[in-house]
Image (cartoon, rainbow, N blue to C red):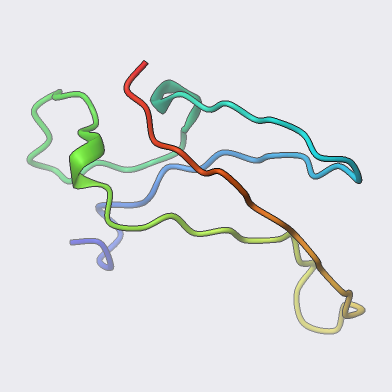
Length: 80
């Protein structure tokens, strides 16, 4: 169902900084996801996370290319 438009991944925009910055995200911070039609109201299950995708902003075809150097360190999943 992921690719038929009835299900979609939730997102969270994080502003990048030039200095190291600790960012803490809770499950409730992610939004705009689409649950499958059979959704029964259960809370997200961290054990079911299959991937995380990092997508730097891009203005589409014809936009100027840019160099990106992002370091993600000490990524930790927590339930609190």
